[in-house]
Image 1: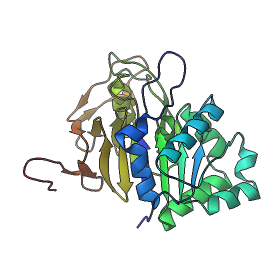
Image 2: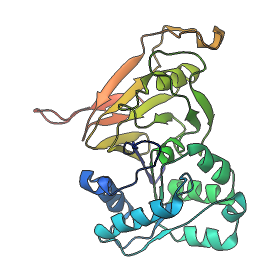
Image 3: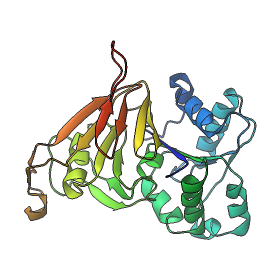
Length: 281
């Protein structure tokens, strides 16, 4: 049984070509949930803005956000190369932490720089053996998967080759995650990701929305929706036989739409929803 907690977050909408990292997660209670899960405001939290093209600004914004929540032991670790991830002092710093928070940006940078290093192994061990929290927003959430969406932006249809897949950090091997799911029209690329890996559960996170994942069970937090794609009952999936650029068809792809407080159990695809009659599996 895994002792730790994973908190992937859908991110907040970027404006133009500039990354946007404000304090909006405070308003939606996302960061408050992160602080609660890692044990309160005195816990040691490390922000990792490796994915970002503006890491200093991003790191500074997170310091302000956590400070507003009363946190007293938050730092930013600027991990820029694999050598740092194997450095003894770096590992010592992370060994005593209770939570890490991966920022948004480019998820491939997280996988390329941290994946397969001593730091990666340490974080994996801590989340498996300790009450440790790994949180991530946008790219930081997508990098948590083993099969990671690395790119692709086709909105109008499900076209073979529209999604680019690569290896993530593997903290949640049963799931494949996409973020900014509603505003950026990413249903098609998550559907293709599931067509490629039909044994996985697809998770589409809207902005200002996240999951609190413990073992194979998760709960929705935040203001938006979560779309769950379950391909376990597919009766038609020709993805492997099609050429790139060809439209994909899938039959009996089960879709769930969940909101704040709703829960999902990955092992048996059981859902618990908030209703006037209460929450039941």
